[in-house]
Structure formats: structure tokens, C-alpha cells
Length: 195
Image (tube, rainbow, N blue to C red):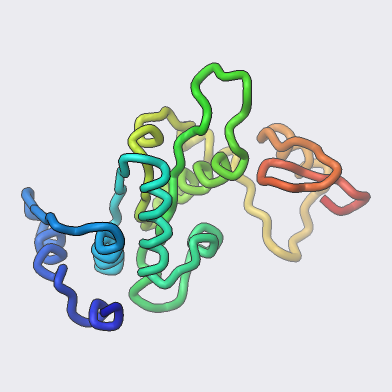
């Protein structure tokens, strides 16, 4: 069934309606993984979208299924701007999780979720073609401004020479925590000339 969906899809009439920007499109009867299969068809057609799921668990499941149907590993979707040179690399899927704490709680959010949120926001700030899967909580939460995000972003390239002290200062200002051993996003360890 997956190989059929690459050439001719039962979703073609709906995709045509999306492409021609029809105001009212009704699609029902999709259950579980069929929703992700449909979304992968939308993504492959080149239409960006933001899917708001009812819960974090449902959003994560839809994201993983969508990534599967796009034949992309969820980790590779976040680390690669370009995928394989085929229809599936037109739009990259991103997961945008909600904060896992309440406002004014005396603890910090999960570092991996902070990294995922920032990665998604950065892709949006660069106007990349993405499809986002999120929750209603995350969708309604305030975010950092585009200009601030872009001014704080630092792109590092493999093999590039970067001034050590300048990089340490920027990472500290960005909220990185110094540790003996890096175990999670948002941590930095210094060992001689190695960061």
C-alpha cells in the first residue's frame, strides 16, 4: 500500500482541493496511522502545515508515524536541512512540544524539549518549508521573537576554527550550563582546548 501511495493516492482529490485553495475541505474516517499517511501525502505535495493534536502523546505518535511515512528518521529530520533528493525532502517534519512545567514552577523544563522547541522556531525563523506537529498547549504558549532568536543563534561547522573564549561566552549567555560531562542538550563541558 505504501508503494501505491507514491504514484496514485486515494487522497488525490483532497490534495487537489488543498492545491486549488478550496475554502471547505471535509475529510473524515481516518483513524490512527491513516491520519499520518494522509499528512505525509500533504507534505509530499509541497503544502506546509501545522497539525495541533489533543495531547503530547498523540502529537508525538503522529510525528513519529508521519516521519515513518516520509521515510525519514525523526532525529535526521531535525539535523538535516536537505534530505534525500526525492519528493519526501520537500518539507521536513518537526515536533514542537509544550513546556512540561507550569508557569512559575521552581523547576526548569526538560532540556531536550527546549532544544526541540528552539530547533522548530529556528526553522520557522529561516522560512524553511516545514510541517509542524504540536499540541494545543504548545500552540498557545508565547515564544521568543524572531529577531532575538536569530541574533542568539550560532552556526558551527565541522572543521571550522572558532575563537574558544568567544564561543564559551556566547554559550553561557544563551543559558548553557557548565558540567563535567555533557549528558543533555543545554550543557557544556570544557576540557583543555576541547569544548
